[in-house]
Length: 510
Image 1 (spheres, helix red, strand yellow):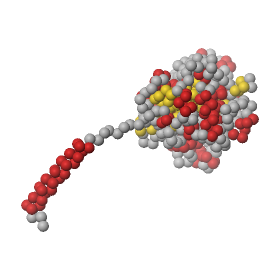
Image 2 (cartoon, one colour; image 1 turned 180 degrees about the vertical axis):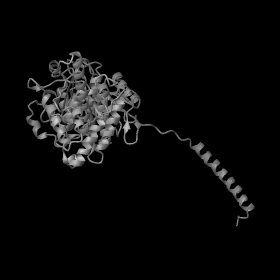
Image 3 (cartoon, rainbow, N blue to C red; image 1 turned 60 degrees about the vertical axis):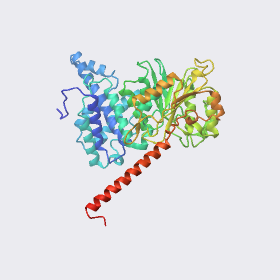
Image 4 (cartoon, one colour; image 1 turned 135 degrees about the vertical axis):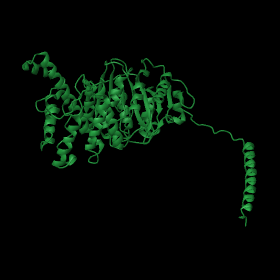
């Protein structure tokens, strides 16, 4: 028997968060949070699938009265098949081995090969035997032993975890914490929860919808949008250019029991992989927080794009914002698709090629809303951002073709100030979403603007042009202020007289 902690009580979400976050101490000061997150999250996933395997194997043995042949046959139909020697308990037993890092790598490779359809390539970017990342053999062994001992404290067997969504939500919590520590690098893999919730509610996903994020990071925005459906009747799709982050997204889906999600690894702008019948797949909902103003995004390849995405114009090679926006609009279903995308404010007013693309999007009646959010919401940047909402139901023949105005919302001043970044609280996000749905003017907050007015402004979408948030200063009563000054001066003269008297009494008036 191992010295693994035997838990009499069930495991809570807080238990998982606490143990996993404490395990990070193994790596702090050694490598950046943006890198050590991979080791923590992969180990959590390994512990989870190992515990599920162990529980089901025990259940089948009882059910089949110890018939090992039948038990083995049943186990080969499991959601994830665990090859011999690869489960967490076996690695834990071998934690003192002088090649424990290599043993973990061998186990992960075996799991990946055995479950290629689901896990192919998921562990390829992380090595537990890396001297560069984890130090020389002795130090590396100690760190991996600590990691195994930390996760051995958790019991993640089915029925032993309190909340149904505990493991998946703990995973997202960890990604959020890693993002907080990773600073600017966080933008590569995480969108703040409150921003994700706003986007998810703006696109109003419905049962049966196909939902896509073409720059999906670790997949949390996709999952948040899926939650908004209110049922399991949805299909998720994503693409991510960073191999390590792509792996995190796939694990995120599995830990949320969304096994059918299709998450591709590759460059969306230059090599879109969500293809159907040699065409770009079309989606009911497209959401994204793409990299801001991406330099060298592939403008040189745009003229020969086989999907002809850039008919409105090719964005500048040093600024890829409208490249992502155009891709998203092109992959939204004609006359049905809804799009919500986070953008830097320059997208709203920059001229040149971007201005021409923006003009055409507006003239095609695709732009539905422009929403300004507060500054300093993201770990990766302190700049204020905006959300653009496009709705292809506004196209000719669509259900909203008669809507030709654009809703502007200035939510930039409503937030809770925290130590390192600002936070959108529930009341702030509710006000944004309620105003978006109601689509009416709100003094100093929102305004529905006719398309003609936008055209008169040269198709500039800068929010202060349309929403006046100016607060007039209170009028000053000059007479009252003068009277108050005179009264204070008189009181000062009286005080000076009394002070002079006290000094004379003390003999200190010389």
